[in-house]
Length: 170
Image 1 (cartoon, rainbow, N blue to C red):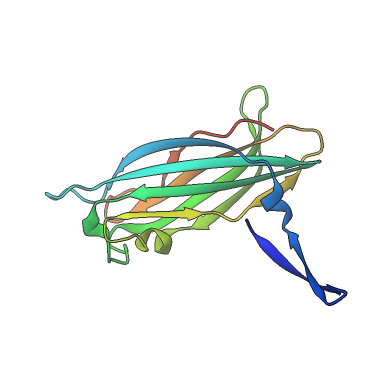
Image 2 (cartoon, helix red, strand yellow):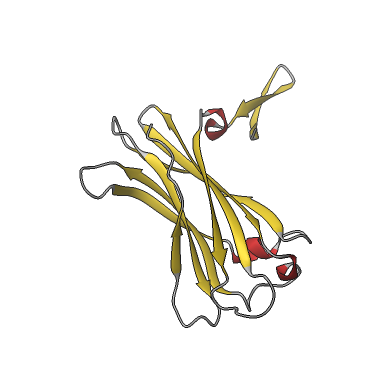
């Protein structure tokens, strides 16, 4: 739980206030993918196992989204800066509204996670949680969705988009 110190004193006591995002009731959807390092074709194992939790919450007319990304990479990636693995690595978090046909993107934010991926432990494992995004939607329903956007080094292609399951609508 995130706690912020409020700069007020009442009868010599500090007042603590819980931040609004921490008090929300989050609805999450977890999904996993095994993704091959498209820029490596050598003898060692090169598949990354990613798990993403896309989460959404509502408070009044506002909808909030956040995501947690966990990974299990082969241990031989550990201790490198990953510049020989990725030209870029981002996570894109969306707030969307379900419409007839294609859903409407209400808000999206890209997070650079290349250095975060490199901060894995010696076994190749790590995790990262995004900051929270929010959008005023009034009475509209919305859901959280997210995707890894990986540009593998030396694969001859640009950014690849790997989608994960979206949360339910709130």
